[in-house]
Length: 348
Image 1 (cartoon, rainbow, N blue to C red):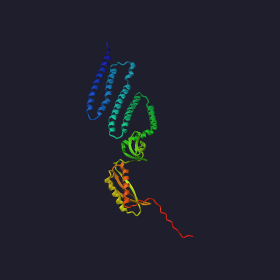
Image 2: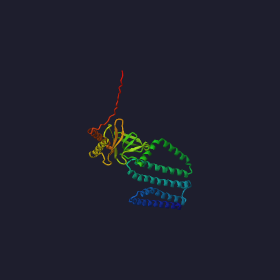
Image 3: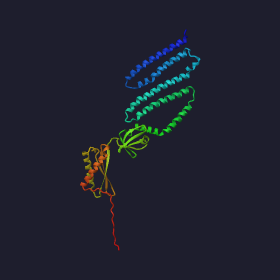
Image 4: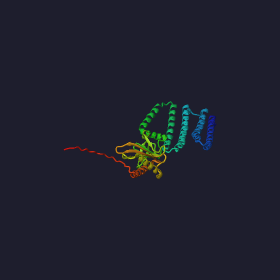
């Protein structure tokens, strides 16, 4: 005849398995309901607690069967000690936290990344997913060691030394990586913007985790470490918009009629507004007489183009027309010259 203890233990385990199956069915039903909601948070929570909950119900029923009905041999009594039970629930907690953090970062991180113009955050998301998992399981490992009264100080010291060694070895990589993150968040420029960085001038074609690539007007790709960009001055020609002020310097000979010179320059600028697609009427052009130079009277004509791509077209058109009008109006454009005067005196 079967020992009543084993019979009751078996009934307890069967009850636990039945309860776990029922919990599994309820969780499946809840997941279907969660799929119909607007938020993803309920799906993330259910996915995190689903598996661990079923395992916990089965484990608790087995524990109850073993402890309540005295069916565990003395040689296996260590399996139901408080330390083993605590370690088991630490693993369950790590399982829940790991799945929750992974799905949370993957779901909401992807949503945020899709709203940005750069692919840097798309590359950061998988790194964060893996880092969160390893960190949670490492903490769980240390807690289990502490549960069994194992000194975890050497592990913490070793982890600190290893982390320091990795940080020093990857110092440039990390500085560029965080530089890329700063560029993504601060947005001093986006892909397609035209910038000037040091002596480099061109359009941004990519922003990566380590470097930013710029295509110059000579069709060359310049790769710039992100840490250099975040620690230096960058001029962005595309912000706040793509309008650009074009400066046309001029010089006329001494003795020229400056009011007439200014009037001619303004006429040429207004002509450019109507005859070209590049020059803006608002803001309007302006002319400034700036200095008495070594060989002539110097100034600048200022006008605006609707796109920085056309700055050379504007300069080319304006210089041609200014030259033609000055010739027609007999206004002399000076060139550098030196007058030498010789004085003769009476001699032998």
